[in-house]
Amino acid sequence: MSSISRGHAALAGVTAAAVAIGAAEPVAVLTGPRSAPLIAVGGLVVDLVPESLKHLAISLFGTHDKIALLIGTGVLLAAFAALLGVLAARRLRIGLAGIAAFAALGVVAALTRPGAGPAAALPALVGAALGGLTLWLLLAGPLAPDLWSWSPPTPAGSGAPAGPAGPTAPAAPAEPTSAGPVGGPEVRPGEPAPIGARAAGRPGERGDEADQEGRRRFLTGAGALLGAAAVAGLGGHWLAGRRGVSAARQSVTLPTPSAAAPAAPAGADLSLAQLAPYVTPNSGFYRIDTALVVPQVDPATWRLRIHGRVRNPIELSFADLLARPMVERYVTLACVSNEVGGDLIGNARWLGVPIKELLDEADPEDGADQVVGRSVDGWTCGTPTAVLRDGRDALLAVGMNGEPLPVAHGFPVRMVVPGLYGYVSACKWVTELELTSFADFDAYWVPRGWAAQGPIKTESRIDTPGPRNRLTAGAVMVAGVAWAQHRGIRRVEVRVDGGLWREATLAPTVSVDTWVQWSWRWDATPGEHTLQVRATDADGVTQTAQRRPVAPDGATGWHTVKVAVR
Ligand SMILES: Nc1nc2c(c(=O)[nH]1)N[C@H]1C(S)=C(S)[C@@H](COP(=O)(O)O)O[C@H]1N2
Ligand SMILES: [Mo]
Image (tube, rainbow, N blue to C red; front, side):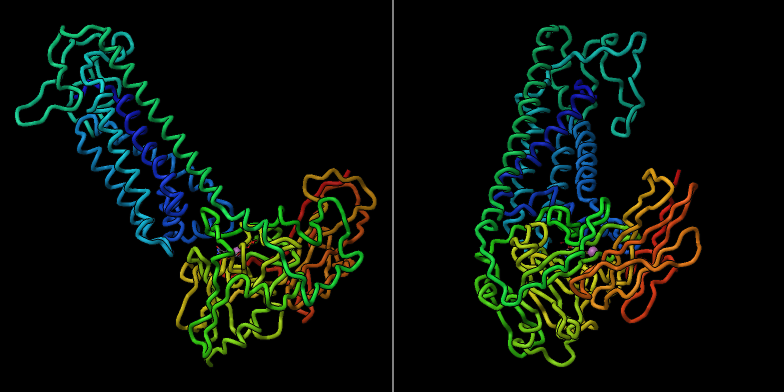
């Protein structure tokens, strides 16, 4: 048994891990943020979630679980590192082997990220080398308290191990305690002495002062290394941010559209508190993607390839794209993971080039019924070729509400297709449109249990009143939004307590491609009430009451809100 306490050994392990992760960050500034070990492994986890754990994928799909994933990974890593430190205090080789195993995982994850070059292995390798060095320094090198014959006293009366012997120390004697004999552990012949025990077998040679000096040196060293790891990690993170594309985004001047969006008609926005505004501001627009770090795509080097089963492959630069006639359109984007009543939906004014014109030039072969949009980070979506060519305003968008696309929303170029859920149409950071067939290729979410075809379902939502509002009897404005992109909304109805359906007033809207606000004046009576809403699309099809989950192709059911009136 080592004379290093488990706590100190665990601290050595955690310090080594922190140094490994921290040192990798500045390297990742050069090799790309997705090659940083935590991000690379996290990304691998996101992509590899097996079908049997589909519910997990579903929750990842629809929510902002990225931070939770990274924090969870960090906590797990710290626990492993602590354990590794304890093992390494007995046999340094075990610790180094553990670091090598983690490095291998980091290297594999970084190299298998789409678009990764061999340099992506560097952050994990450099991190592992410095992590290993740290472990040696603290447990066997100049910072190791290997001459200790002292360890913190255990509670009075306990000369026994402070806790159950771990699996790492079967039948090993307790750590030396103040009550126990001063001296080193027995070393069986043929076994190398545990680290930290080498010089500890000579009782009486060292006094308390030297022990405390060794302990101080170890803790100071660990603290300094942790500090250096934090500086390297945060500094690297900061540098990576400076290498981002926000400056490039700021210097983009959007062209004037040759076909401007029709002005939103007066009254399209009822401007009620709690009611979603007709146009969603960029800052409040929902964000859904699998990217653990937002891709930073430099417009100066951006290229779009239109290739695959086409007679005339095309390659465009950002300048080429901006030089083409641009149209501006309001389109309401929706996520397939939006629950009934949910807010994964937003309406924006998009500026871009009609995809139809580019496809006409590329001249797809017959049978190439799928256009696969591919993002710089390898994410893919599959859109029916026919939908992109049927005359709707499917855009390669560069502008959102009068600004260049925000980086998180796909800068410099993304797809926007009215009528289809985002996962089959709205590729952000798009760099490729590949013509293929649905029979030949499954895009990102399809093998993960989501439908290959994703037309948006007719839905409606009550925004006001909310379940927590204090309502008083009398006139209450009930209002919300309804959408059936590219078909349009014909009618919205509201009912109270399962009574008769009452027709709501529809606000004017720009086109069939956006949501519409609706309102209904309710003469509220005291008591508990249930409000429900349903929409009918322009084809005359009424939203179904049947409650279905978001997977595989979008939730259905009537949004229901319970309110109390005094
Ligand atoms: N590159 C990339 N594009 C993507 C995704 C993604 O994970 N990666 N997610 C899609 C999904 S599921 C939706 S709903 C929309 C959301 O777009 P937004 O984040 O701009 O609202 O982006 C789509 N485009
Ligand atoms: Mo989505």
